[in-house]
Image (cartoon, rainbow, N blue to C red; front, side):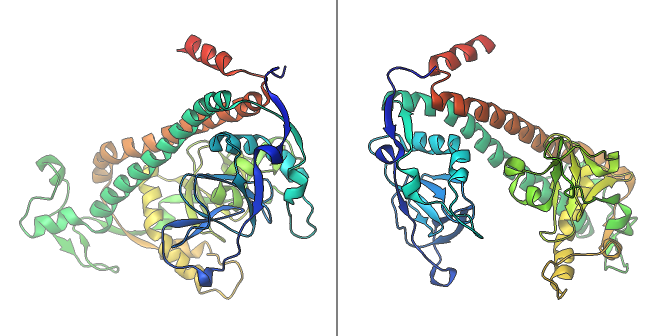
Length: 405
């Protein structure tokens, strides 16, 4: 039931929208000002067109998208931006439009290219809370968003740490170089240092640590290609993981299928996926069980820890991207044979096993953080329309939180 003290008004009376400003990539200069287009921050410029904080809607192309920036920014011509908040809390306005996203999509007036007209948005009648309640609502939703953002930042740091350790030990061979020079390997105790040989030997890929072998990406795992599950999609069932879901996240996915798929064509939380066409990148799937579409390998490690396969693939990505870039096609890709051409120095099984205790905890924590963020996002998305419509009041959420705590 809608609260009696909410005001009946229109969107335009609470958030006046303005069309963004055209600017080409050629006219942009190096800077830190985000240029926000309908898909989000697309580049950076040295000049802001609008003072932050800002709320930006997709006007052309990605209709229904809603973005929030704290800093000064440049709203692109493909967007509508809130020119006047009329004294409302800017972040509440952002959450309002997020909850209103489906209605924005329905206002599409484009033909070949989706388009949103601000004159169709402004007259829409709504019920609106006073600023004090806006701020209370924002406090609840922002706490969830801030925790999600903190998890993302933590994962960025954890990934960088694990990648740096992996590269130092297994790609650059820093401990072996140090021992060959008569030095103690940096940041490593004597027991760990003893696991690395003191000499290099020549190989087909150049000097590698003594006792190690030359192998290839192909020998580390089984690479199972997905299938065309978008064909005859039912719209219900499990999500179909396309390259689009890997690049931008599954949040806006509309492709679902009830088709039966074997285990090798199914992604489970924590699985490795490798898009061998288009974006050409390595991903860890953190969402619920889904089916894997064509142009994506499910990577199933064969006798190696998943983290070892993941970081070796990360190191090989530039090699694969170079192959794809040489192809005279509109969508660069690699072939299965190229997996065997990506060579690497393979440590002894004992060394990999010992290093598991160092890198695996970092690798697992990243997955745990992502799973927590998914749970928090689901809670936020469930609360968002109820809080924004007044169906649930702030004090009810606070009381529920206290009971759970």
